Length: 75
Image 1: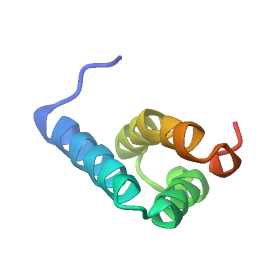
Image 2: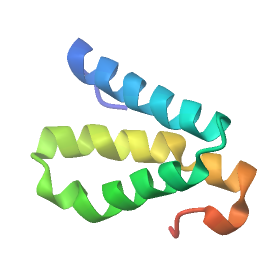
Image 3: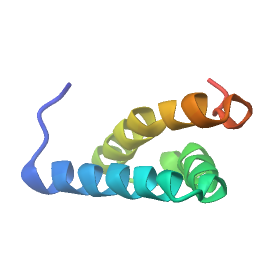
């Protein structure tokens, strides 16, 4: 994993925590929409931020496989 500055790491951690909390509270549709947004919009963000969001997407993708395989993002 590439080295992250403190602000980027904190942002990733906050987004991952938010996605996981939404999932734990039964908000799988919101989580799925977040992943759909990341998949569709990643290319529009600046490169460094795009890399950070890609890490968030990868870190939370397994949520779907555990809870509802039919909701899993297509790889």
